[in-house]
Length: 52
Image (cartoon, rainbow, N blue to C red; front, side, top):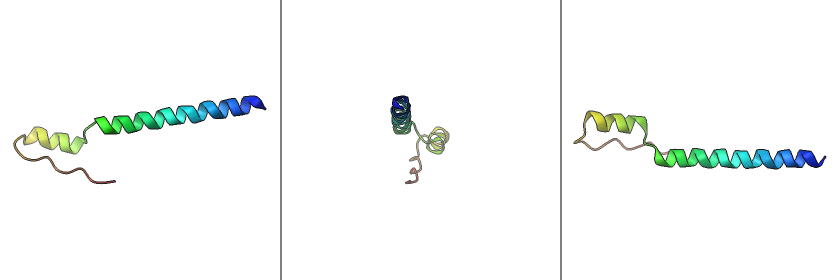
């Protein structure tokens, strides 16, 4: 039965790592619509990103 808790701990750890990676990716990437607007009209202010 101890293997069950080992697998559960590994799964929880992988979930935490995946969630942290998703948050870091979201933090360091630009929204596609804002990047496209900036490329099309570089002198204008880019549109605001919608709040979640």
